[in-house]
Each structure stands twice: as C-alpha cells, then as structure tokens.
Length: 287
Image (tube, rainbow, N blue to C red; front, top):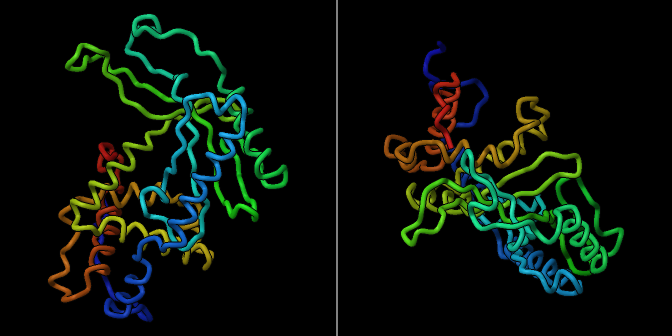
C-alpha cells in the first residue's frame, strides 16, 4: 500500500503564501449577476409553462438544482439546472413483495414521454425553435431576448418506500425526482437532500465547505485548460462529493501555517481524498 500522501516542495511551485490570494479569489460566492441569472431562468421557465394550456393546469414545481441552488457555481461557466417536476404522477420503488395497490396508488394519467414532449413544446413556444435543443436527458435553452441559459429537465416525483410507517400510520418514503432519458433507463436524483446535506456541511465546517468546492472546481478548470489528462472527465458533482466526504475536522486547521486558511483546507481535502480512495474499502461508505 502506498505511503500516506505528504506535502513536499517541488521546484517552481508557488509557495503557500503565494497561493492564498489566488484561492481567496477562487473561493468567492456567486455574484449578484449569477444569482439573477438563476432567478431569471426559473422565472422564464415558469412563464413558458403557464402559457401552455395543458401544463398550466397541472401541479408542477419549478426549481433550480445543482451548483446554482447550492451556491457552488463558478465564474458563469455553466448553465442553470432547472427541474420541472410533475407532482401528481410518480415513479416508485417498493419494498420486496409490495406494489402500487399496497400504498393506495393507481395508474398515472400521463406518461413520462408525453410530459417531456409537453415541456419541450412549451419551451419552444416561448424561446423559439433555435433557442431550444432537446437532449437525451434535458432541454438546452439559450435565448438572448429573455437572457436565459439553462438546462431544463422534466421529471416526475420519485418515491422510495422504506417499509416503515410515519407517526400517523402512513407509509414512510424518501422523496426525490426521476426521469427517463430518450435512450432508455431511468435516472433517480435527490436534489433536496443534496442541497440540505451541502448546507449542513457548510455550517459544520465553519462555512468553508462551499469555498473549497469552488476552489477545486476552478482548479480543475485551470488543469483542463492546460490539457492535463487527469482533469478532463471530472464532473462538478464529483468534486462536491469528494469535498463533502472529507471529515469536518480536516477544515479550519490553519494555525500551523499562520493565516493561510484556504491553502490549508485545500491541502487537507486533497490529502484526505487521496488517502480515502486508495482502496475500495476506504471509501465504500462514502455518501
């Protein structure tokens, strides 16, 4: 087994004190412009749905998800992820031996394919055919008049029934979202849990978690621009997960370096991630 990863000086490297101001810039939260971009995307998608005769009558929730909602987006380099969730038709996972009827559920009134088609039609009606591109998973919406840059995914509510009961006797379930890509299969996500976990991690680490996530995303971007092969296929969600799985007590240990909190946090996250992923056993319980 490789020895524990240790910091070692390399000729030509920046010193920790030289890195700190760079990391400070990278760590900064979303600007007012970026927040307005997110809010406008939600508003414009809602307007598109409200203008649809059929969709305007459905129980639909429109919300931002991913890095914009979690405030870990960086440098306006990504579209806003917008979820359009139908709340009255469900994708469900049941305990062994259970089915729809055991939970009082009946067949839905609309298929997922039809719902996605309706969402696509509503987007095209508002933003134009050239402003909307249908992908296997989401609609890519780019339109200058309404200043929207968004990836819009149509979803159904997803329920994972646990087999337990709530205090009132009702069936307990975990609530998420799910959708069927155009090429088949099903994708299940937990946007609310992802946001809540990130928010708690940020609080538990003295508000350092989001800063380190932004730093690592921008460091990845710099490495990609420099054509570093190892950085080419690192999605933002993976970066967030790796930082989230770093123990809380690895944040805020900057005393031995004086006033270099971000450099120290970054070093500790990298070391923790490296050591934790050397074997499958080291990270099998990671969330």
